Image 1 (cartoon, rainbow, N blue to C red):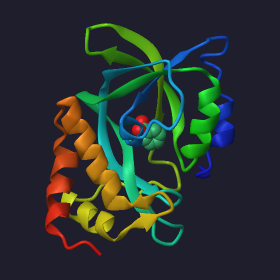
Image 2 (cartoon, rainbow, N blue to C red; image 1 turned 90 degrees about the vertical axis):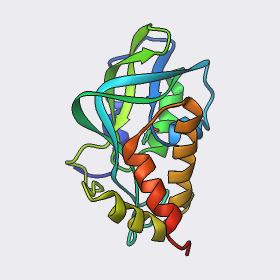
Image 3 (tube, rainbow, N blue to C red; image 1 turned 90 degrees about the horizontal axis):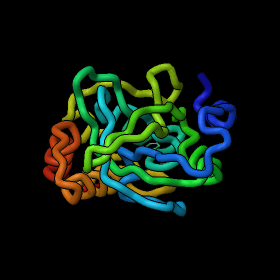
Image 4 (spheres, protein in one colour; image 1 turned 30 degrees about the vertical axis):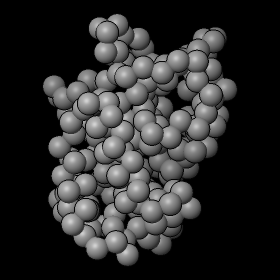
Length: 189
Ligand code: BEZ
């Protein structure tokens, strides 16, 4: 699959006719909401885990030296914590462009902290996209992140911002926090 997913995402019609849609953010959307939203609530989705397995050629790396950013991988029984935004459909045009490097929209149940839930959307980069890098140890991921940088800034700042945002939400994520620990012990370049 080509890693430019804009056209595929714009064909999705699950929420056609809706005036607002919940979007679940688990990566940069937690700490960088550069779009208008009606409401924002801490939330989670089930049976997915966050992993630094997606290559970033356009934000935290380059074509020749991609960085590593998060995607979700299926994981029965797991719960992934993040932030849900109630947005109008026009905002998806902005997000489809911002996240065009392999991320597809998927409809999913979103669970709010107060026990309420709603059907919404999440962007996921699956393993069949060209930018997918796949599994590596947390130490290798940290070593990779330590040397990557792109138009949106240093890859390590993406990791640190995400770890800080999860701490602010009061949520643990062993994968993210282990990479953070390794990264803090590496010299910054
Ligand atoms: C997110 O933060 O939910 C997100 C991460 C990567 C691509 C799109 C969205």
